Amino acid sequence: MKSKRILLGITGGIAAYKAAELTRLLVKAGHHVEVVMSEAATRFVTPLTFQALSGHAVYSDVWDARPDNAMAHIEMSRRADVFIIVPATADCLFKLAHGAASDLISTMASARTCPLIVVPAMNRQMWENPPNLRNVAQLKADGVSVWGPAHGVQACGETGPGRMLEPEEIADLLHGFFDEKHLAGRRVLLTAGPTFEPIDTVRGITNISSGKMGYALARACRDAGADVTLVSGPTALPPPMGVRLLPVQSANEMYQAVLHEVGHSQIFIAVAAVADYRVKNRSEHKLKKGEHLPQLELVENPDILATVASLPAAPFCVGFAAESQNLLEFADSKRRRKKVPLLVANLAQQAMGADDNQVVLLDDAGQHPLPLQAKSDVARAIVAHIATLL
Ligand code: C5P
Image 1 (cartoon, rainbow, N blue to C red):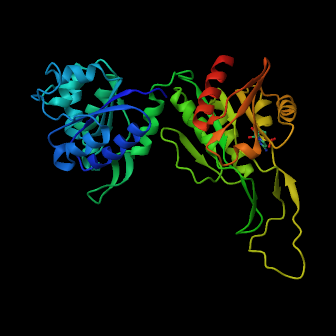
Image 2: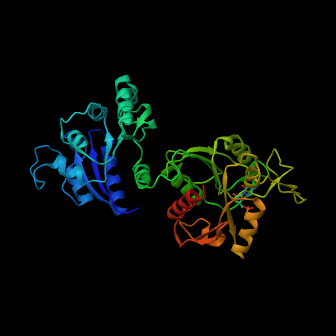
Image 3: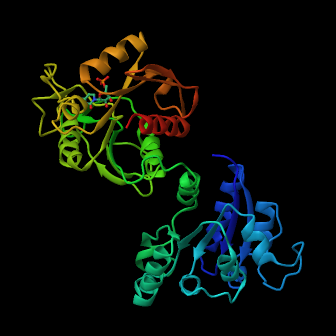
């Protein structure tokens, strides 16, 4: 993502301390971050903290004469690519929903020309207060993006909706906010991660797969405007924000989940490293070491991608091939055998567990090699390629 000018508004809630970490993440990602705070926010965290983290003066007073022409509310919001308010209190949402211009942040929001994002944080009762929900609905109707809140334990000790998204989640969503909406209005179904085929209650057969490529693709589809469902085998990754996650264990569970969901999807991307075989004579109890070696009888798992690709109303199917040798030859024969219009070929030894990946896209037009880059960038390039083929 290119460097953006981000105007970060902070209003007065305890979650304000998390805006410091968000500032750090955004600056680290190369963005120009300018911070404005409500008077209440400065009671929770000092402007100095944000000045040090952003490297720019922090404003909290509409009467502050420091900006060049003493018109901070116009100047700062005009030069921003986006105005994001983190956290946004109930009072802030009320002001924005009613077009107030009664303090620096609401005045800047009224005077802005860039998109506005609010990330609410408040007690669950305050969130569910009907006037607050009306304000949120009004903001959405006005084209404001409302991110979160999450459900969980709150600073007040209660549990419910109103928890602010984590700084990493906000930075992730902001990263994709400016992406081209290649897949707007499309429904995408993906598989990711390994599958786990039990042998007994504590052992199983699995593949090495971190799930990073599949999760990056789910995010890239989300950022391209798609409605995304991710069927994932066991991974250690946090669930991507704004993606419907269906966790599964075995190939059969993945197969069932995919068949259940695929009818609603226009695009199916199979990234999962599905185990080819499962154990037929799975033990209900932990196998004990004894005189005889246990005999495992294996049966073949269904090929999820090939099944979906052969459905009468098949979605646009994308497959992956991780090979350790003869990459393009094996990948091309896999593409033909599974009858998928697009196949992404990568070297298993390079792709597995890594944060970067180098892939070749194979379609009817031929081979399209991509450079070695972060999996998030590989994912974006794949999404852009899919959009050209649809
Ligand atoms: O394992 P294989 O190399 O055949 O995987 C190629 C593609 O097929 C991958 O996209 C993978 O997710 C998919 N696949 C599947 N179900 C299987 C095996 C593979 O969907 N049982």
